[in-house]
Amino acid sequence: MNRILITGFLVIGVAGCGNIAQRLGIGRDVPQSASAVVPAEPDVTAAVLAPATAAPPPPVAAKTAETLDTTTPEQRAAAAAPATAPTKALGKTVASLGSPTEPGLWLKTPLVKTEVQGRVTNPANGKSSIVTLIPIDGPATAGSRMSLAALRLIGASLTDLTEVEVALES
Image 1 (cartoon, rainbow, N blue to C red):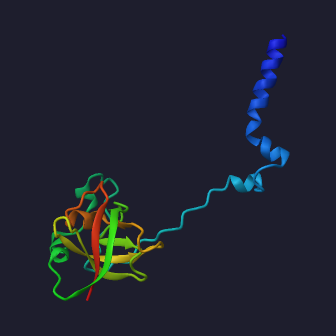
Image 2: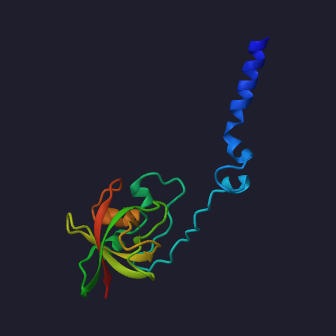
Image 3: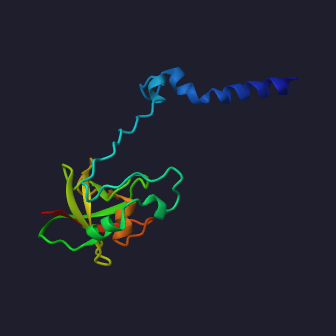
């Protein structure tokens, strides 16, 4: 009987250890209700893309890169065409795949402060694409997120981090 009582007290005591510091008033001065609050991620709204880089959203049932990429062959050909005017280099950034369900040709990057049309180039193979450059918070050295269609167009891996050169289209 004593073993059962001792075991019961130990189980109850251990179960309450998580809050013992708060109950004794030691440690952080954060109310219990505030420590359970997880900050919400900022709302990311879909960008209004330029006609040359816009595309319709993919079908709900889309599961492959081919079905998620809704850019037309004409758009891809126009975006991949060499620059006809001089471009202004903004720098290099490491790009990862952005939301694959967000259509169009875009790069979300801290290299720009306003939405503007630009060009990304994959230095590994020389392929480039016109994209809409969309600003995101962070230092210029922070990474960027690129659309599925743009990554495919410049011949970059969808699962790796790819360094790209970013420039403004004149």
